[in-house]
Amino acid sequence: MNIELVKKEIEKSIAVKANILKDPILLSQVIEVAAACIASLKRGGKIIFCGNGGSFADAQHLSAEFTSRFLFDRPALASIALGTNSSGMSAMGNDYGYESVFSRELEAVGKVEDVFVAITTSGNSPNILQAVEVANKRGIKTFVLTGQTGGALKSKADCLHVPSGDTARVQESHILIGHIVCGFVEKTMFSEMAPTD
Image (tube, rainbow, N blue to C red):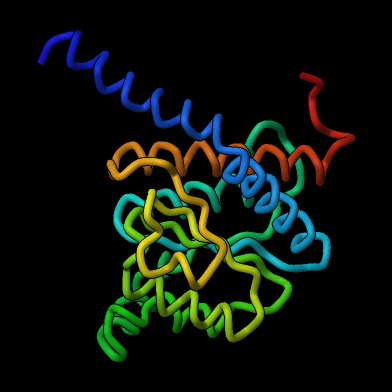
């Protein structure tokens, strides 16, 4: 590997983000997610994340930004990432199948006041599909961070389509979107504590 190859990868990432900047629908959806999270937290709800593989790590990452802190010290905000109880996840996978690991947990902890954010680059993960179905039945506001096509989920929830079919580029953009949402929520919920830009 040489420097030119490294630069090429960075340029690919920049190109996707440049396309996001030119997508007014996607930009508006980012604001919609943040507003929904604020409304949920103000009415006693929580922000629930889930994903598989790298997206599972992203789900935990973004949930931690709420419960710990993001840009400044402030009180904790209610959030969980599904699947982080490994005993529960293995039990549900064993007893009901891996397709049910998120939906089963969402049945236990989800309520109408919550916001559910599923993260899937393909939009086709069976366990995410089942979880979205549970969220829809329970009236939980749901958003899906996904890739260019949205897969099977595009007709089942509000999907934020990152304009790329490259998994790595999509995942990088999911974290960018998540961080924007976290920052907006944090500054709005604790405006009196937020540092001035």
